[in-house]
Image 1: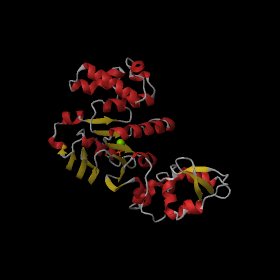
Image 2 (image 1 turned 90 degrees about the horizontal axis):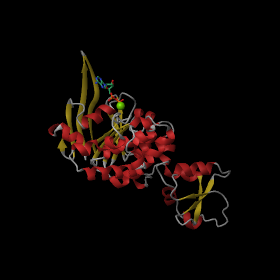
Image 3 (image 1 turned 30 degrees about the vertical axis):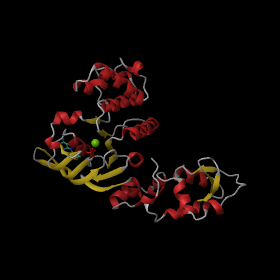
Image 4 (image 1 turned 45 degrees about the vertical axis):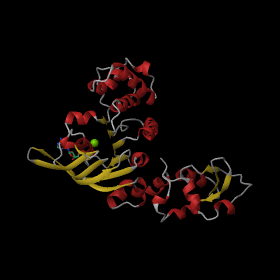
Amino acid sequence: MIEFENVTKVYESGNKKVTAVNDVSFHVEEGKICVFLGPSGCGKTTLLRMVNRLIPITKGTIKVNGKDVNNTDAIELRRSIGYVIQHNGLFPNMTIEENISVVPKLLGWEETKIKKRYDELMEMMGLDPEQFQKRYPYELSGGQQQRIGIARALAADPPVMLMDEPFGALDPVIREHLQNEFLKIQKEMKKTILFVSHDIDEAIKLGDQVAIFNAGKLMQFDTPDRILSHPKNDFVRDFVGEDRSLKRLSLLKVKDLVELIDGFVEGRNKSDWSGQVISVNDNLRTALSVMLSEPNGEAGVADEENNLLGVLHVSDFSLLNGVHPEDLTIVK
Ligand SMILES: Nc1ncnc2c1ncn2[C@@H]1O[C@H](COP(=O)(O)OP(=O)(O)O)[C@@H](O)[C@H]1O
Ligand SMILES: [Mg+2]
């Protein structure tokens, strides 16, 4: 668990003071991804870098797994926390294998164990260990470099990862691919991850929890669904955008809506259905776009075994208003 208690950062440059982080308190549970979201300059990077003490805390405390970071040796702390930045920060004069092995070497691991870990991480990132071993970062594409950056941060298997816009510089297709891979890996790793983003879509896709900041202040700390369905103030409402209802739909499954309809299975079965069919496991945003492309706004719903359960109509979406988000399955 990572605990922020009344954390403040004031930068002093000359006679000017900038409050980059202003009295921020929240807790991130173990094994969860918390996305720090907000516009440029709102203090996300500053808050992140106070966790591994790259930036000193002005006021308040940060605890990682119960231990105040200020009472932990800074070097030891940094070795126990993986850190990934936007432009991967690979060492240009080291090979890919050397880059990934930096922390295990510093920790004094045996050579065979380091080699094994290198192979394992490359496999995990979907890169051929042998092919890349002796290459230098400049010989890799942006997406590959970013994966190496993540592999390097994971090398010593730290329980906590700090990721500062790690996919920010990538083109949308590669970004989406890496986001999906990252979620798959996290399902098994279950690390506690603080992830900085300025992109609401990335935040709702990756975050178990989202912390939205404006000018150093925490605006809302909540699940993506709650942020979209119950924005706490005008800033959050504007930041998540006009289409927040649509975004919310991408978090919910067809199953959720079907469960809200009385007698869906018995009463609405149409065995002669010849229109489009969606799955109970599709997200509702996809489902809606399918239904809107049909002249009567309907689609058949099939279960996991591909049996037709019934027919859904666009008007059924109104049932979602006022439903408590905790009662719904969140797609991850
Ligand atoms: N070393 C520094 N000295 C003075 N001001 C800084 C320094 N680093 C960041 N700031 C200021 O602190 C605020 C927050 O910056 P930052 O944490 O980088 O925001 P974000 O990551 O959300 O873009 C900004 O106003 C920025 O200009
Ligand atoms: Mg930043």
